[in-house]
Length: 476
Image (cartoon, rainbow, N blue to C red):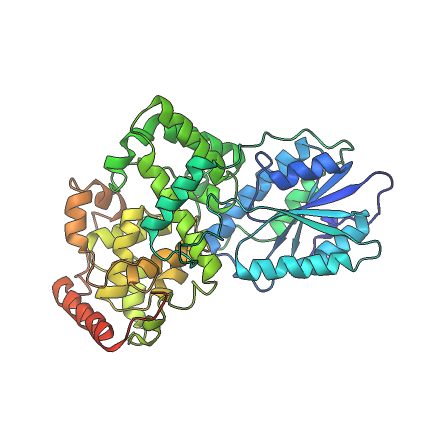
């Protein structure tokens, strides 16, 4: 689908024209591909392609965020004299047609490390090369701190976080991430932009819900876009980073960065965050190490996705392929999804997720443990629900974290680690503020849908049986 009001139809004379193909890099600052295009071309166009065949469609909450992110990107690009076009579907055909229509000789993009994404890029490269005169695809490195090609001393991919992050930190000390790039100068031959036409094209995508508007009020909670991402980082460094090591596991305290959705859509780069935290540490000794370690876990998730492209559908540990998951229980799953399990911390987390598009990380682990271990429902059930309801649903971190809790992933929690929601509530929400915020206090609470002690023993028995009957395979 292409909105005709946003379609370019005339080849533009004179000078070199380049196209910047935006993906999960919706910003204008610290953007190597955009900076390169503006340096090498007289005229620059921009395009975003939604719902590319072969890629997992993003969930509803992410679509809500994408609307705001594209809106702000279009405005920032307009300040540089660059119109942003939106298309949906086959990126190969769209980029080939757009290049022909504009007379572009170069397409610029930021690399995406996923296997399906790399296949699309190669198909685009081949299609553009076949256009008369030839069009080159110039791909800048992905926004990662760690080279996915990193290997152990034996030449194998890392499977355990601690040695992975130790090695990565040593490499980062020797060779820090590239310095952040400034917002580039406007195009030498600015193009006329049409904000009204773009707004109509964006609305035609239907990214925001209307009937019903289940995201009502989110505009008061979230501000997508590059400028807001940098403001959020600044506030976090000034107000919360010092308390982060001691309070990051407390859902009743707001000391987490809340940068994850900005990172998912590339509104800010992980290299910029790394440099900002590193600079802060120099004037605030003792700050930042714990937060950088969390960035390390994000890197580890993306590293695993490169080496295990089926992370969202298949167990990372092959020995889990035959784990005896029971048939899905719709009643249990629905109670979990709707925050009606009768278990306070779990219900609070699921209500927070539905009402805000996010959930505190400590609570994410608790609700995931309840689903996969106490309720013995497949981790894919939870992964798919989070994919649809999180504004920060990340193609690497989301399945990685679900497999970690379930025990089937890289460096996973041991099978006997089952989070007790009641003990977790007492430890991390000691005054009950988080539960009171997200669980209605004036409603009759349902009885717990599962006995925590008995279901724990049943889960342990199932996991022990798997441990005893399945030999560990190489790579685990």
